[in-house]
Image 1 (tube, rainbow, N blue to C red):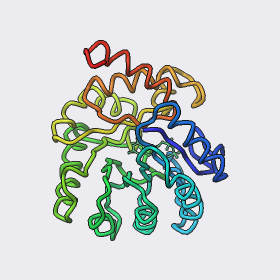
Image 2: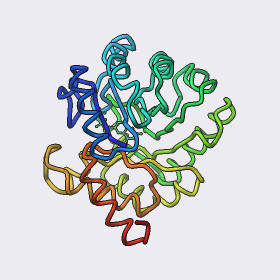
Image 3: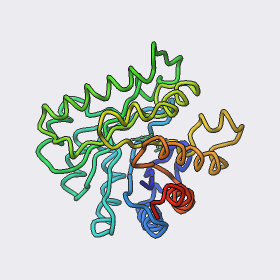
Image 4: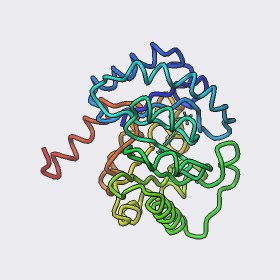
Length: 258
Ligand code: HH2
Protein backbone atom coordinates (compact mmCIF):
# COMPACT_ATOMS: atom_id res chain seq x y z
CA UNK A 1 0.00 0.00 0.00
CA UNK A 2 1.62 3.24 -1.18
CA UNK A 3 0.95 6.41 0.85
CA UNK A 4 0.13 9.82 -0.61
CA UNK A 5 -0.54 12.56 1.95
CA UNK A 6 -2.37 15.55 0.49
CA UNK A 7 -1.52 17.64 3.54
CA UNK A 8 0.73 20.53 4.52
CA UNK A 9 1.83 18.88 7.76
CA UNK A 10 2.28 15.09 7.51
CA UNK A 11 5.34 14.01 9.42
CA UNK A 12 7.41 12.76 6.50
CA UNK A 13 5.92 14.10 3.25
CA UNK A 14 3.84 17.07 4.48
CA UNK A 15 3.60 19.86 1.93
CA UNK A 16 5.07 17.81 -0.94
CA UNK A 17 1.74 16.77 -2.45
CA UNK A 18 -0.76 19.40 -1.32
CA UNK A 19 -1.16 20.55 -4.91
CA UNK A 20 -3.60 18.08 -6.58
CA UNK A 21 -1.40 17.62 -9.64
CA UNK A 22 1.63 16.82 -7.48
CA UNK A 23 -0.43 14.30 -5.50
CA UNK A 24 -1.82 12.65 -8.66
CA UNK A 25 1.68 12.45 -10.17
CA UNK A 26 3.01 10.95 -6.95
CA UNK A 27 0.17 8.39 -6.90
CA UNK A 28 0.91 7.39 -10.51
CA UNK A 29 4.61 7.10 -9.71
CA UNK A 30 3.81 4.76 -6.79
CA UNK A 31 1.68 2.61 -9.12
CA UNK A 32 4.66 2.45 -11.52
CA UNK A 33 6.82 1.41 -8.57
CA UNK A 34 4.46 -1.51 -7.98
CA UNK A 35 1.93 -0.40 -5.35
CA UNK A 36 -1.06 -2.78 -5.20
CA UNK A 37 -3.20 -0.24 -3.32
CA UNK A 38 -2.88 3.53 -2.88
CA UNK A 39 -3.80 5.15 0.44
CA UNK A 40 -4.72 8.81 0.02
CA UNK A 41 -4.96 10.93 3.17
CA UNK A 42 -5.90 14.60 3.50
CA UNK A 43 -5.54 15.08 7.26
CA UNK A 44 -2.33 14.43 9.18
CA UNK A 45 -2.55 12.12 12.18
CA UNK A 46 1.02 12.69 13.33
CA UNK A 47 1.46 13.07 17.09
CA UNK A 48 0.33 16.55 18.07
CA UNK A 49 -1.63 17.17 14.85
CA UNK A 50 -4.75 19.28 15.13
CA UNK A 51 -7.68 18.04 13.09
CA UNK A 52 -9.06 19.87 10.07
CA UNK A 53 -12.72 20.42 9.21
CA UNK A 54 -14.38 17.92 6.89
CA UNK A 55 -14.80 20.72 4.34
CA UNK A 56 -11.04 21.34 4.34
CA UNK A 57 -10.29 17.63 4.15
CA UNK A 58 -12.69 17.22 1.22
CA UNK A 59 -11.31 20.22 -0.65
CA UNK A 60 -7.82 18.63 -0.53
CA UNK A 61 -8.98 15.10 -1.28
CA UNK A 62 -11.63 15.29 -3.98
CA UNK A 63 -9.55 16.72 -6.87
CA UNK A 64 -7.02 13.94 -6.26
CA UNK A 65 -9.68 11.21 -6.22
CA UNK A 66 -11.18 12.64 -9.43
CA UNK A 67 -7.76 12.60 -11.05
CA UNK A 68 -7.26 8.96 -10.08
CA UNK A 69 -10.72 7.71 -11.08
CA UNK A 70 -9.44 5.43 -13.83
CA UNK A 71 -6.19 4.38 -12.23
CA UNK A 72 -5.07 0.77 -12.28
CA UNK A 73 -5.16 -0.03 -8.56
CA UNK A 74 -7.76 0.22 -5.79
CA UNK A 75 -7.79 3.51 -3.89
CA UNK A 76 -8.01 3.57 -0.11
CA UNK A 77 -8.95 6.82 1.61
CA UNK A 78 -7.41 7.49 5.01
CA UNK A 79 -10.11 9.32 6.97
CA UNK A 80 -12.01 9.16 10.25
CA UNK A 81 -14.88 11.45 9.16
CA UNK A 82 -18.20 10.04 7.90
CA UNK A 83 -18.72 13.03 5.57
CA UNK A 84 -15.40 12.31 3.90
CA UNK A 85 -16.10 8.56 3.78
CA UNK A 86 -19.41 9.21 2.01
CA UNK A 87 -17.84 11.45 -0.64
CA UNK A 88 -14.88 9.11 -1.13
CA UNK A 89 -17.14 6.11 -1.68
CA UNK A 90 -19.24 8.11 -4.17
CA UNK A 91 -16.03 9.06 -6.00
CA UNK A 92 -15.06 5.41 -6.45
CA UNK A 93 -12.81 4.63 -3.46
CA UNK A 94 -12.41 0.90 -2.82
CA UNK A 95 -11.36 1.08 0.82
CA UNK A 96 -11.84 3.30 3.87
CA UNK A 97 -8.77 3.29 6.12
CA UNK A 98 -9.91 4.67 9.48
CA UNK A 99 -7.40 5.30 12.28
CA UNK A 100 -10.52 5.66 14.48
CA UNK A 101 -11.83 2.17 13.55
CA UNK A 102 -15.25 3.57 12.51
CA UNK A 103 -15.95 4.91 16.03
CA UNK A 104 -17.12 8.36 14.86
CA UNK A 105 -20.85 8.84 15.09
CA UNK A 106 -22.38 7.72 11.77
CA UNK A 107 -19.20 6.07 10.42
CA UNK A 108 -20.44 2.47 10.57
CA UNK A 109 -23.75 3.46 8.99
CA UNK A 110 -21.99 5.37 6.23
CA UNK A 111 -19.71 2.55 5.19
CA UNK A 112 -21.98 -0.48 5.74
CA UNK A 113 -24.35 -0.12 2.75
CA UNK A 114 -21.46 0.24 0.29
CA UNK A 115 -19.19 -2.60 -0.77
CA UNK A 116 -15.88 -0.95 0.12
CA UNK A 117 -13.24 -2.63 2.26
CA UNK A 118 -12.42 -1.12 5.64
CA UNK A 119 -9.26 -0.98 7.71
CA UNK A 120 -9.99 -0.84 11.44
CA UNK A 121 -6.99 0.54 13.34
CA UNK A 122 -6.21 0.70 17.04
CA UNK A 123 -5.30 4.06 18.55
CA UNK A 124 -5.06 5.00 22.23
CA UNK A 125 -6.35 8.56 22.68
CA UNK A 126 -6.34 10.97 19.75
CA UNK A 127 -3.49 12.34 17.61
CA UNK A 128 -3.18 15.65 19.49
CA UNK A 129 -2.35 13.95 22.79
CA UNK A 130 -1.76 10.25 22.04
CA UNK A 131 2.00 10.26 22.71
CA UNK A 132 1.62 11.78 26.20
CA UNK A 133 2.45 8.78 28.36
CA UNK A 134 0.58 5.96 26.60
CA UNK A 135 -0.19 3.20 29.10
CA UNK A 136 -1.33 -0.41 28.84
CA UNK A 137 -1.60 -3.36 31.19
CA UNK A 138 -0.76 -5.84 28.43
CA UNK A 139 -0.54 -4.05 25.12
CA UNK A 140 -1.00 -7.02 22.75
CA UNK A 141 -4.06 -8.33 24.61
CA UNK A 142 -5.61 -4.85 24.85
CA UNK A 143 -5.05 -4.00 21.19
CA UNK A 144 -6.35 -7.44 20.17
CA UNK A 145 -9.47 -7.07 22.33
CA UNK A 146 -10.14 -3.59 20.95
CA UNK A 147 -9.85 -4.82 17.36
CA UNK A 148 -12.08 -7.82 18.08
CA UNK A 149 -14.71 -5.46 19.53
CA UNK A 150 -14.53 -3.14 16.49
CA UNK A 151 -14.76 -6.11 14.09
CA UNK A 152 -17.88 -7.28 15.97
CA UNK A 153 -19.36 -3.76 15.79
CA UNK A 154 -18.64 -3.59 12.06
CA UNK A 155 -20.19 -7.00 11.44
CA UNK A 156 -23.24 -6.09 13.52
CA UNK A 157 -23.64 -2.98 11.35
CA UNK A 158 -23.69 -5.15 8.23
CA UNK A 159 -20.06 -5.05 7.12
CA UNK A 160 -19.15 -8.59 6.07
CA UNK A 161 -15.92 -10.05 7.49
CA UNK A 162 -14.52 -10.38 3.96
CA UNK A 163 -14.44 -6.58 3.79
CA UNK A 164 -12.40 -6.06 6.97
CA UNK A 165 -8.67 -5.54 7.55
CA UNK A 166 -7.22 -4.88 11.04
CA UNK A 167 -4.22 -2.81 12.09
CA UNK A 168 -2.58 -2.54 15.54
CA UNK A 169 -1.76 1.11 14.82
CA UNK A 170 2.00 1.31 15.26
CA UNK A 171 2.88 4.72 16.73
CA UNK A 172 -0.69 5.65 17.68
CA UNK A 173 -0.61 6.08 21.46
CA UNK A 174 2.32 3.67 21.88
CA UNK A 175 5.85 3.91 23.18
CA UNK A 176 8.82 2.39 21.36
CA UNK A 177 8.53 -0.63 23.68
CA UNK A 178 4.79 -1.00 22.96
CA UNK A 179 5.43 -0.90 19.20
CA UNK A 180 8.03 -3.65 19.43
CA UNK A 181 5.90 -5.74 21.75
CA UNK A 182 3.15 -5.57 19.13
CA UNK A 183 5.52 -6.37 16.26
CA UNK A 184 7.00 -9.32 18.18
CA UNK A 185 3.48 -10.66 18.74
CA UNK A 186 1.85 -9.71 15.46
CA UNK A 187 0.82 -13.34 15.02
CA UNK A 188 -1.61 -12.81 17.93
CA UNK A 189 -3.28 -9.99 16.02
CA UNK A 190 -3.31 -12.14 12.86
CA UNK A 191 -5.04 -14.82 14.95
CA UNK A 192 -8.19 -12.70 14.74
CA UNK A 193 -8.44 -14.38 11.32
CA UNK A 194 -8.43 -11.18 9.28
CA UNK A 195 -5.74 -9.64 7.06
CA UNK A 196 -3.37 -7.46 9.09
CA UNK A 197 -2.10 -4.11 7.85
CA UNK A 198 1.15 -2.76 9.32
CA UNK A 199 2.33 0.84 9.07
CA UNK A 200 5.93 1.36 10.17
CA UNK A 201 7.13 3.50 7.30
CA UNK A 202 9.49 6.29 8.47
CA UNK A 203 7.84 6.40 11.91
CA UNK A 204 9.47 8.02 14.92
CA UNK A 205 10.02 4.71 16.69
CA UNK A 206 12.48 3.94 13.88
CA UNK A 207 14.06 7.34 14.47
CA UNK A 208 14.32 6.57 18.18
CA UNK A 209 16.30 3.39 17.60
CA UNK A 210 18.48 4.60 14.69
CA UNK A 211 18.87 8.25 15.63
CA UNK A 212 17.82 9.25 12.11
CA UNK A 213 15.37 11.88 10.88
CA UNK A 214 12.17 11.06 8.97
CA UNK A 215 13.89 11.52 5.58
CA UNK A 216 16.60 9.05 6.47
CA UNK A 217 14.66 6.04 7.74
CA UNK A 218 14.38 3.96 4.56
CA UNK A 219 16.62 1.10 5.70
CA UNK A 220 14.87 0.89 9.07
CA UNK A 221 11.45 1.06 7.36
CA UNK A 222 12.37 -1.82 5.04
CA UNK A 223 13.52 -3.91 7.98
CA UNK A 224 10.29 -3.21 9.85
CA UNK A 225 8.13 -4.01 6.80
CA UNK A 226 9.94 -7.29 6.31
CA UNK A 227 9.66 -8.27 9.95
CA UNK A 228 5.96 -7.40 9.94
CA UNK A 229 5.25 -9.52 6.87
CA UNK A 230 7.26 -12.39 8.35
CA UNK A 231 5.02 -12.18 11.42
CA UNK A 232 1.78 -12.24 9.45
CA UNK A 233 1.10 -8.76 8.02
CA UNK A 234 -0.65 -9.01 4.64
CA UNK A 235 -0.50 -5.33 3.73
CA UNK A 236 2.31 -2.90 4.48
CA UNK A 237 1.57 0.82 4.30
CA UNK A 238 4.71 2.52 2.97
CA UNK A 239 6.04 5.70 1.42
CA UNK A 240 8.84 3.91 -0.47
CA UNK A 241 7.10 1.36 -2.67
CA UNK A 242 9.87 0.18 -5.03
CA UNK A 243 12.38 -0.46 -2.27
CA UNK A 244 9.76 -2.23 -0.14
CA UNK A 245 8.80 -4.48 -3.04
CA UNK A 246 12.43 -5.47 -3.53
CA UNK A 247 12.83 -6.27 0.16
CA UNK A 248 9.63 -8.32 0.18
CA UNK A 249 10.74 -10.21 -2.94
CA UNK A 250 13.74 -11.48 -0.99
CA UNK A 251 11.42 -12.80 1.72
CA UNK A 252 9.12 -14.32 -0.90
CA UNK A 253 12.09 -16.11 -2.47
CA UNK A 254 13.19 -17.40 0.91
CA UNK A 255 9.71 -18.76 1.55
CA UNK A 256 9.45 -20.25 -1.95
CA UNK A 257 6.72 -17.83 -3.02
CA UNK A 258 8.36 -16.48 -6.21
N1 HH2 B 1 -0.18 5.61 9.90
C1 HH2 B 1 -0.36 6.90 9.52
C2 HH2 B 1 -1.56 7.29 8.90
N2 HH2 B 1 -2.53 6.41 8.65
N3 HH2 B 1 -3.33 4.19 8.74
C3 HH2 B 1 -3.18 2.91 9.10
N4 HH2 B 1 -4.14 2.02 8.85
N5 HH2 B 1 -2.04 2.48 9.73
C4 HH2 B 1 -1.01 3.33 10.02
O1 HH2 B 1 0.00 2.88 10.62
C5 HH2 B 1 -1.15 4.71 9.65
C6 HH2 B 1 -2.35 5.11 9.00
C7 HH2 B 1 0.70 7.92 9.77
O2 HH2 B 1 1.59 8.03 8.70
P1 HH2 B 1 1.51 9.18 7.56
O3 HH2 B 1 0.25 9.09 6.80
O4 HH2 B 1 2.73 9.08 6.73
O5 HH2 B 1 1.61 10.55 8.34
P2 HH2 B 1 0.53 11.65 8.76
O6 HH2 B 1 -0.47 10.99 9.65
O7 HH2 B 1 1.36 12.69 9.46
O8 HH2 B 1 -0.13 12.16 7.50
